[in-house]
Length: 240
Image (cartoon, rainbow, N blue to C red; front, side, top):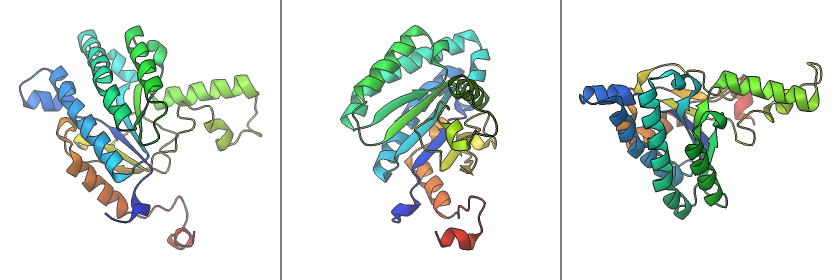
């Protein structure tokens, strides 16, 4: 893939299949989550190598809070450990780290590590790595609507999509060009409902712990072969 114009600005990944991967190995679900950390590392490296500006990862949804408490606790511990271990590498590799979601629901220690990692990488100018934690698309739209009304008191007659987007949790982050969901599931599970209006979707069968750079490359090649029209005709797009 040599045409830089075909490289997406923002790729987002729903990291699915950790539990099924662990079950195939005869292991508990948490071992699938641990194995998935290496996939995060490889995806981040690949995105930086390819010149992708934003890589976002759906790590923990609002709905995930309903999972067994033991699994949730282990996931939170895993996140803290991963943030601690990876922050120096992110700084070294000029990667900016951000977290999007309803942080108040996260354990205090997780919140503290997130703030520390964000501050440590704030001056980075390369890839921006965004992790979605305690996030749902419906929550994002609802909180944006509430903030928009409170701060601007706008009516439907004066509200525009551009004005509304300023209140989304993703304000300042470009909408995803490509969404990848591993494990073959073909749905977006309440993730970035507003932001993915014109996103290209790709659903590989590979489980997330097995997702490697070559799998990412295949996704980019699939994206490169598509024509994005944004509701226009092919002729209109080609004339832009």
